Amino acid sequence: MNLGAKTGIPVLACIALLATLPLWVGNPYQLHIATLIAVYWILIAGLNLSVGYTGVLSIGHIGLLAIGAYTYAILTSRYDFDPWLATLIAAALGGACGFILGLPSLRLPGFYFAMATLAFALMVTEFSLAQSDLTGGGIGLSVPPFDGFFASPSGLYWLAVAAAGVITWLAWNLTRLMWGRGMIALRDSTVAASAVGVPIFRVKLTVFAFSGVTAGLAGAMFATLQSYITPETFPFELSLFFFICIIIGGRGTIWGPFLGTIVLAILPELMGGLARWGQFFYGALLLIVVLLVPEGIGSVIGIIREKINPSRHEKRIVNPDLPRLVAAIRGDRRYERGISLNAASKHFGGVLAVNRVSLSLQEGEIHGLIGPNGSGKTTLLNLISGYYLIDQGAIELDDATLTQSSVQRRAALGVARTFQKPRLLGTLSGLDNAMLGGWKDARSGFMQNLLALPAARRQDAQLRARALEILHAMGLSHIVDKPASLLDHAEQRFLEIARALCMQPRFILLDEPAGGLTEHEIDQLANIVLAMRDAGIGVLIIEHHTDFVFRICDRVTALNLGSSIASGSAAEVRADPEVIRVYLGA
Ligand SMILES: Nc1ncnc2c1ncn2[C@@H]1O[C@H](COP(=O)(O)OP(=O)(O)OP(=O)(O)O)[C@@H](O)[C@H]1O
Image (tube, rainbow, N blue to C red; front, side, top):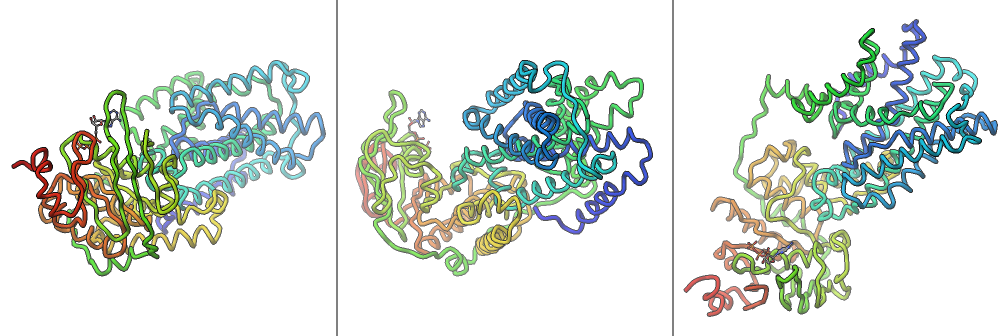
């Protein structure tokens, strides 16, 4: 996520090229197209944060562009507003409309949200047609040029490019700091995002409202560039064009959609007499990209590089440095009452998955949870971590009740977890995956991340140091730069544990962490779990490898058919006749 020298040089070359364009492009039409691309990019850079990074699929951004354009046109032509002030108001109104649209609809599943944005765009068009006193209706509205120097074509070009540059910088800040990891987590695994405490709705709404700001800003510039606007200036195809630029460019990067915008905007200009086939070619290009390079044209360089010089990932034996690990994860321990689950029950329809189970977990102890398949172990872990709310009973952490608390609140209070199947972000490196665990400590505010303020950068640097220390101590130095999707099963399991440890948890809930590991890896896992206990963390561990459980657990609870059938020391539970009958075998 860092801009290294390799990318810095092309970026500087690109900036120099864009800054000098009016000096060597003599044709006014070509300058108009270049300005239009810069204006489109202002919108697309914001939309990319929403669609490409956060996975919030909006196909109605044309409505927000139209709101910005009409706001600017009405304020400057009818009310004589200063163009700068009108532009600011257009951007603010775009953001406010994005917020108001997102507030009720961002809780909907992706497809329905996309439909809501489509409905919004249609409403904006109809509104601009109906309110002819304000908008000029079908006749339209003449838009005055910008102020002074910026009224000239090259002045407007430079203004648009400068605004596009600032928006790109803001987007880059956001994506390289903690918010970027949180956004990608929402896109790729909401379950993992919740586990580390990312507030799903708030992040989506903030990013979507910000994309409204960029759409409103682009709208103001679009209006002055067009000099005359009618509802037909904002066809729905333009909304699809914005969306397609991101998909074709490749989600999850900034330069991919930037390339997509340039290619798609220039394409019709290069086609001469075939320009009327423009929409057809957009469609064909989209089809080709989706079928052949679904990650977008932005990924082509990576694919070529991979073909020339395939990246090898050599699996290495995970060999933790235990004293270093204990030092890295030892936090301030209060050793209070810990977690207590009192007579908790959970039904799924007619199935009583957990039946009046009581259990407690203290800091600095390892509590094992065993039982046959379907006995309710994972459900119980989901009740403690907040993925399910209990039907009857109570859950407390120290003196606070957690019974109705969200997953995020429990994560913020120090309850971390892993999953039966590791939930990692495949496109992010091992280090970024681990750093995601520090969300609650390094999230800063949205504005702090957007502007890359010193506090946000400092928090990110501290978290990077913490994550690196934990990865090195766990023997995972070799996966720091590797995308998680390239890692083998054991490395993914250990990396997920590292992410949980980066939360600096008081308690960690491990769901079948030994599943799929070799004997040697299970031994290393046991050492790591013991190190967690030495560091004062309370560990609840679900496992079918009973030798492993009885070897390391201080206390064990056995479940059968949702009920607790035995609880006590490992030796007591191992010798319990009922446990032997239903689970361990005679
Ligand atoms: N989301 C759900 N909807 C409906 N039934 C569920 C759900 N989750 C669990 N169950 C049911 O609740 C019971 C307990 O399941 P749970 O996954 O907690 O068991 P488990 O002990 O973790 O099993 P395993 O060892 O196989 O992971 C099972 O009968 C299961 O089918």
